[in-house]
Image 1 (tube, protein in one colour):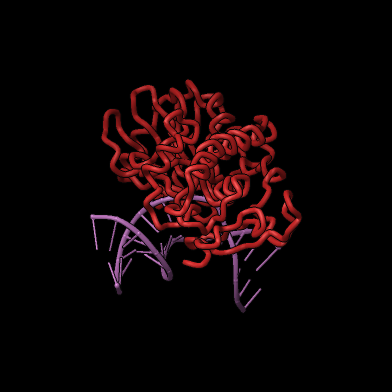
Image 2 (spheres, rainbow, N blue to C red):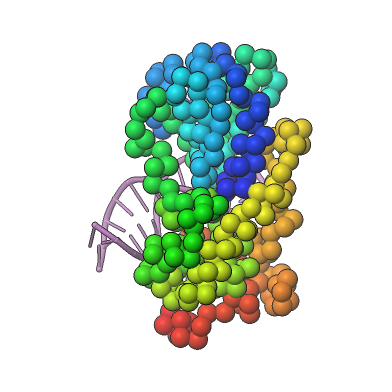
Length: 283
DNA sequence: CCTACTGTTACGGC
DNA sequence: AGCCGTAACAGTAG
């Protein structure tokens, strides 16, 4: 359930189902998903605790308890979170079940088991989740071309890798970095230090534009979310490059190409997202 | 059978 | 120190 729009979708569907609910049973089937603290303390802190509200930060979800404790989650590649009726048959790879006080249960499911949970006690400093090193939210007013240039304009790393850097902007992953660069008409393999001022401006504008577009497209009802087992993506019909390698570009009909950048597959239009001649010569 | 995969971290080498 | 590339995590889908 990976990037910001999907995590935001989960938050919006689940939060109203959790607020004010007391956790009356904890069933941890796979202890390795708990990153912090030790298992007994993790369980004990959650048990009989009441959920106050939820928050999304980057690709993390936070569940705040009324006593100030906080459960943090990251879905990594294949995690999902869903509220189901009590004793509803769990999906395969369901690692945590929290039974609530209204005959419902929260299920955390993750086939690949890359997802992680952390429990921070009230006032405890966060040195473990990775949330503390996140950069700005895509919708933050401070996310300007000046901010991006200050953070990135000196770097030789590709712009694609820079957009994936959670310590600069939080929540962009492999799908949406490709979508952003496609609409910006910037080659994903261009070095950050070779971007022009105009290109930084375009990127600063498109990060919030593209991310809010996909948050909108991902809107889903509680019923549809439940029926899709918390894994349905509403936005996929709107992706213009990700998953479309070999298909015609929607701007110019050229064939979209795929290349590996920073170990991640990247789809782009070789016609619309040209590198400056000098850039391609250097690389 | 083989490859690829929405994410992040740890490691060795420079 | 910082940066880079790779492996690791582990299962499923095509």
